[in-house]
Amino acid sequence: MAEGLNGGPPVAQNRRARRDYIIEETLETGIVLQGTEVKSLRAGKASLGEAYAGPKDGDIYLINCTIQEYPNAGKFNHEPRRPKKLLLHRRERDRLLGAVKREGVTLVPLKIYFNQRGIAKLEIGLAKGRKQHDKRQLEKSRDWQRQKARLMRNKG
Image (cartoon, rainbow, N blue to C red; front, side):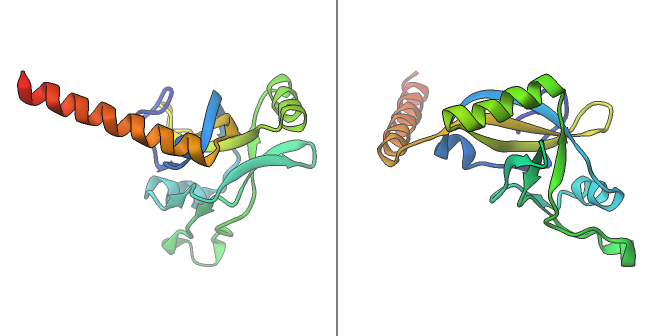
């Protein structure tokens, strides 16, 4: 299983991101979470499938990320799809917001993981959309690499 930048295995991973987008740059950010959200993340109850990062009120937020409710929280539970603020340095934030406005790139969440200190981190990618024929070409090349490795392993 792939490790995070400085941490353990991912809690949630966006598997389609590298297929649907050309990732130009990755960046580690912090996330503002409530206590029950952290407990649900530790239980592995999160999904990044439909999530994206975007500007809101001058900051960058993680939108449509689903963190299921924590069953033992009772009435103190969190809203599963609430927007979560990303913690970035001002220069990084301004650079990313400028890139999104100018170049037509997207901020795609790649994975959520806990670093070595036990703090939840989000890896986001600065990405450009991939065309359908590019996706097909990528699939063909990956299949060929798999077949080539299988043949080499069997021959030798």
